Every structure is written in C-alpha cells, then in structure tokens.
Image (cartoon, rainbow, N blue to C red; front, side, top):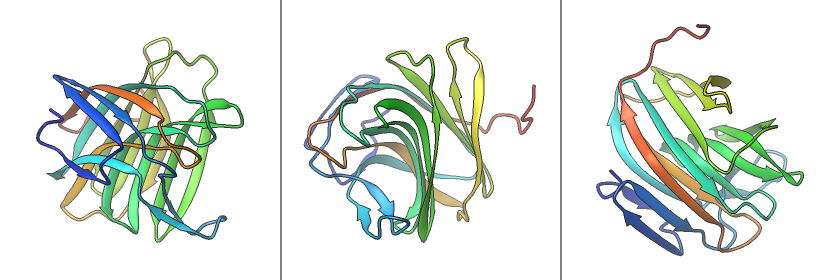
Length: 189
C-alpha cells in the first residue's frame, strides 16, 4: 500500500508497518499559496502515487494535534500551483475538517467537528474536474464537506499529507488507505 508511493518533502521521521504509516513532521511545514498571508509554502509532507481517470480515495488517521495549524489528511495534486488538501486541522483551539483548494491562489474552508473521536476517516472522489470531499461522522454516515473544482489532466497525484506550520514533530498515524473506483455521483441518498 504505502510501500509503492513516493514522498514529496520526506518527513523528519516515518515508519511503514503493513497498512499503517506513522509520520513525524519537520519544522514549519505547509502547503499554501499567497492568499491573505502573502507567502508561498510547498514544503509539507505528501506521500503519493500517480493515478488516471476517476477514483475514490479513503484513509483513516489520528494525530497528536497541539499547535496551531497542525494538519493531516488527503491531497490531490497536479503541480505546485494546482492542488487540494483536506483533512483535520487544529485551529482556534479545536479540531476542524479543513479544505484548501489552490488554483494559483489558496482558499480555505473549515467545518467544526463537534463529536470528533481520536480517529477520523475522510474520502475524496474525482469525477473529471469535480472533486467530492466527505468525512465519516460518529454515526457512520458520510457527510459532504465540499464539492470543488480543479482542472486536472487525465493523470494526477493522490495520497496522504501532513504539515505543522508552527512547529516540528507533529505525530500522525494513517491506516486503511484505499484507492478504488469512483463512488456513485448521487449526492443525496
């Protein structure tokens, strides 16, 4: 599973054991472009594989969130100016589902997670240039976080990401990373 994937910005420390990946982030790592803060960061940790056509990718993860902007989850990437990252982010002293869509400039949206357990499962589905982002709630139901647009060529990079913009050593565990055929386009079951 993780063994045949490639690092963009290898982390400080990582270990793969079967279907599990443990990561410890490097100092001041992030993915961001311009908006609001005026800087560009492309040094976050991204473990990926290239894939073509439509797909659904899913992963379960848990982190030791302590510092502002500690984050972990999934990323789809075309290049350094076109990508989406989504997952859990620590901001305003609580955990949020976070999505950053970047098309030259980054935008950021967050949704507070009221009943967040230690682990969270998130999935991203590609339908051409449309991307559907969902998380699994405490009742086992998929909740829509965002339906986003990204101009994606036939082949793109997909994988897990983690960052710690304000520190070094954020620890996160990923498991059950699965890429499969795209789920149904039906948004409302």
